[in-house]
Amino acid sequence: MMHGFIPPERFFAYLSWTDIEAMPNKDQVVIIQPIGAVEQHGPHLPLIVDSAIAQSVLGKALHKLDPIIPAYALPSLYYGKSNEHWHFPGTVTLTAQTLIALLMEVGESLYRAGFRKFILLNAHGGQPQIMEIVARDLHQAHDDFEVFPFFVWRAPNITKQLLTEKEAQLGIHAGDAETSLLLAILPDQVKMDCAKAEYPHGLPQDSLLTLERNLPIPWMTRDISCSGVIGDPTTATAEKGDRILESLADGWAQVIGDVHRFQQPQAWKE
Image (cartoon, rainbow, N blue to C red; front, top):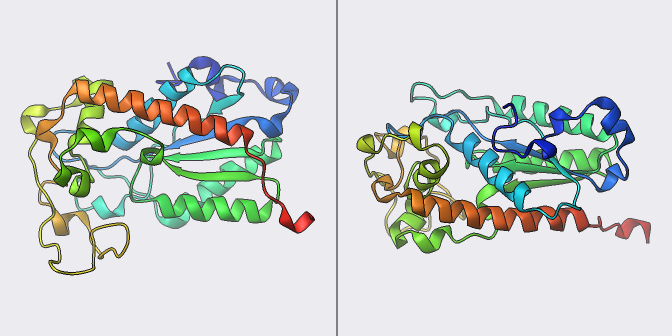
């Protein structure tokens, strides 16, 4: 079952080279690279969280996708840039340079095969900037290569509606949302008896500086969490995870359709 959560008919690596050579309109086919990480997620979750989320959300989205839209998932990239977690045993991290080089070469391979629409579907919060660099550099190298640096949680979804205000703001790692999703997709790998809530220690008060987003402070996970958890997983449920998964999959089916229909602006040709 090498395809995992991905529908087998949508799994790129099950195609033969002759299938790809004969594929019509390859410039309109959407190729999606799920990208995660192998990194600590507290004592209650496995290392595979981000990779499992990327693949399961994409798999369900592809099940929901209109069958006439040609789209294929590449095998998941399990390792990512996870050095913020490297003080916790088990975390496997690539350097930014290695991850950029790997994704650039995957993109070049797809371009050489005739594909022109490529989604980087990333589920690890420590590497959106990597996706943006790769997308820009591949498009610079090839004017007709449309590369999309997407983060799995940014498609339309209802997750924040299911969280407390504090969790929605500060629960960024191994908290309610991720734990609920894992209870829905990999329940046997979740140890709820080990779950504990821990919010960031020592954040600046009465300051414009933030943990993430607008004006982020420098931090490694051990600076702000002893357990590796940043949030409250104790309130997670499989029912909540099912709702989050369905919502994310609906959003991603729409995103993939939008990418399929997208036409690259070319003002320089006018």
